[in-house]
Image (tube, rainbow, N blue to C red; front, top):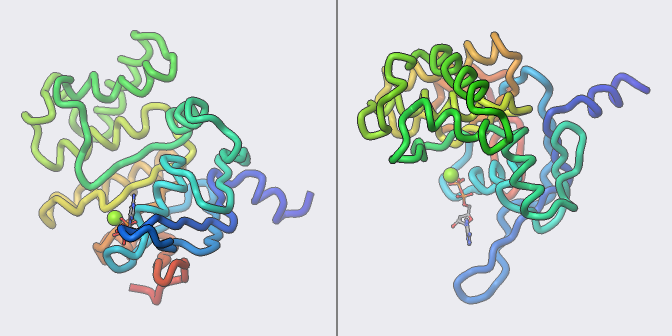
Length: 237
Ligand SMILES: Nc1ncnc2c1ncn2[C@@H]1O[C@H](COP(=O)(O)OP(=O)(O)O)[C@@H](O)[C@H]1O
Ligand SMILES: [Mg+2]
């Protein structure tokens, strides 16, 4: 196999010719993404920027198999997700994709530890192992002293740290973050960014981060801008 072949074969996440249209209020076709190609390497951090409404969340949802493209394919760990049933897709997301959103989306009735354990239990891990993994991740993100707190008893920064721990509990191929610090003050944002990049170093994590924050984008290996339905390399921020 050629070097290029090896790289493609090992890519944690790859998209080919990804297009997405929505149906507008008047029933017309609203093209959002047009034949987007994208590959991320293991351990790579890619930032995606772009105007509000450009389609960044739409793209991230397609890459993470939360939504299906109108055309094109997504490959996770070299495996096409296109032909999978909804149930199979949920399984692939659970095992291979970690999501962090602008708002934490933690389950309010469960404490931090339980929230982190949840995807591991859903993935079939036994209770003791799930607990152990969740505890160690809460320590890694610096909130193990808040393990028994419910989301409402946590600060915004702590909530996002728990969300990061939850995203990583099944050791995903890729972490997808959609404006992860969009709701945090600048000092708390910086600490969350430090955490993400520390985790990237420690775990060879591949991350795709949608952000408006130039301080975050500048830390990525690559910055891409989404505009007019396509991804282009950004002028360095
Ligand atoms: N489910 C949907 N149905 C119709 N239009 C949608 C839907 N989701 C997003 N859109 C539209 O697609 C465009 C891109 O949205 P989005 O991906 O959320 O942009 P961004 O994250 O870059 O701000 C917007 O114009 C939005 O209104
Ligand atoms: Mg968005």
